[in-house]
Image 1 (tube, rainbow, N blue to C red):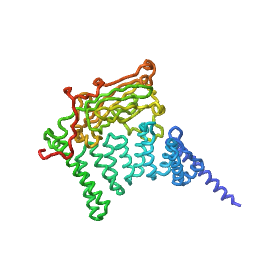
Image 2: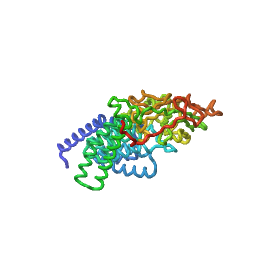
Image 3: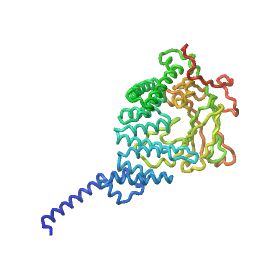
Image 4: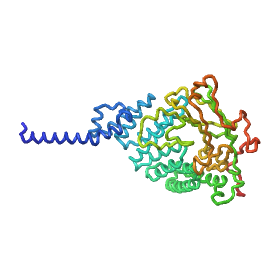
Length: 459
């Protein structure tokens, strides 16, 4: 039997433990749960009380692994909504799970789509927030800096300074893969800094050359030759696109970006059926390769900007997008100087709820993301492009873009009220019901794309 003194000691210890547990629950555990795990912000993803007990007892990594195996089954089933809370639980239980962060960002940013495979862009701020949480908790590896930069570079395809900043940080990490170093030079070009891109290519070439001299394998030789080709191409483009002349304060007359070409943008939107748009218009550039961005969104959508969006507004990783908001983004492919696209939003009422009374349709074109054969005329800064109606130099400082906006009401989109029996139409004032595209003086104009390696001896 225990002595009276021993019993008293155990009772005292139990009291201290109970007080300590209560204090911990009140000051640490409950506030943490309320902030990150309570209903409305976080769902358990099927974690049981026993599993939570294991997690609190120091088995967090094991529970994270169990949950991630469960998430794999949800991926196979296409049950994407069920994966979101598991991603957040796994990264909370084991912040060192780099692959979960990376997969989660891709899943949130790319996997939620409508019937026509348009991404639900309301999720993108959460993907960005997850990436930021990941690289802040794993600052010694390149991967999450790179993956977050990739979202800016590829998915958002705008505000390229963010991609440059994150790719640059990724390059400071010793574990970065050689092939992924090249993306920084490409991001610098999209950010309107081709001379810095050339410097980066030259730096990469010296690195690749040393690797090849140390190990003359096929992979090292191929990498070196690829970078050498990028160096040569960038040199030629800097000259032919008038960039060097501009930087030296000389006239750009006679270079490929001079004189600027009028792209002759116009657009018309009709609503043939409820929640279905027919978007038509002109773009006075004959070679294929132009894609004009079109966005339909709530007129007073929170965090929206003219011709863009503040994708980095979220300070926490919220699992649900603003479900009452409507935002659709698509690309208008130009062929024979015209575009004509049907945008069907009738099958996805949760993605396009159309709750608000008024909406805007924005058209946006930035030559920084254009293919090289188009940039050979327009250059990286848009100096070879103009539009007598819709050239804009304000919404993207230091850039020449094409931007136009139309207003449309919910009744028009949903074919209600006065629009029940007549087809709604909204269009830019310069829209013509014709395939004829004219230049500044009314003449027919076709853009002649110059050859990349045309003669530059006189320049």
